[in-house]
Length: 400
Ligand code: BEZ
Image (cartoon, rainbow, N blue to C red; front, side, top):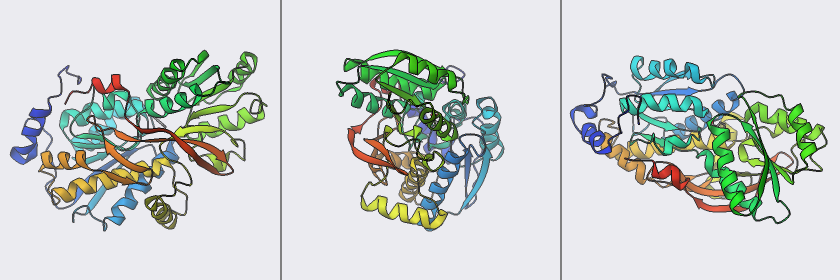
């Protein structure tokens, strides 16, 4: 449902997309007709998710560079908006990109609460939108749309993968979960809970924090008193780094193993001073994935930006790869929207994470790896779940 309560109609969308410059039937948003493609990057450039936004932009720019600096021969103009991971500012920010700047493509964002506001606008306007992080369930469910793709993940996926791993361990029978109380934390814990309970495990306490709170001391004392067999934690960015340090300082590391979706340890190990050693996580990317694509990607990324890439860079890169594939199929003519969407739907990405295809809801289907922190690496240990699609209940809600 959109804000006005209307079901999104795929057939109407595609028909409209083919007629009259590809946008008849949509509210008064006039596309730029010039040779340059206008791409709106709506990402967090400040706050605890700022490093994630920077990685996504780097990854996208690398894909553009590898495409020859243009998508299907069309140069690019970036219009950047700092969304500050603030849902309250999201309607004005996305409105600026879509209605004032009249971008041809929106790439964003990280925070699921911001993403939901973006989707309401891009969905109604029919403007192409690639989500390079936010794992919001509704994006691949009730709010799915032909013009919206996600190159990252759903929050459910890595939670489900870690829950499956823990369920297989007979010594881990009671767990405490901890996470930010917004869509990402709730959906991640939901994925974990579903798989873990099905395997006979018990959740003794669910702990919640408001986003972006990073005061953990009372929670750590409570965990020590509860003595669970493991703690599953959803946190990310600099707040995750702080949690990993606090967890270690509290002395819990040796008594209660800490696990999570990969966001807990992704991109933060350099600032944990070894505090995360041994922490296990599940994610669709990790260090030491020895595929030819990953090797060339890591080298190119390091050469371009002087840093090691993380999962956020991979999703930004794949957003660029996906868009490039679509643009090549329509020879750079974005007015041919039906063809552009079809080509993107059929794209099989040679991603640094491994092969990726898109579900009917435009969400990635990809392997989930079990990783372990060894030194400064999230080292891939094994495949936790092969070719994982999204939560069946979420997918069922997607009508297009
Ligand atoms: C989210 O809001 O969906 C999210 C943010 C950071 C990491 C993972 C998911």
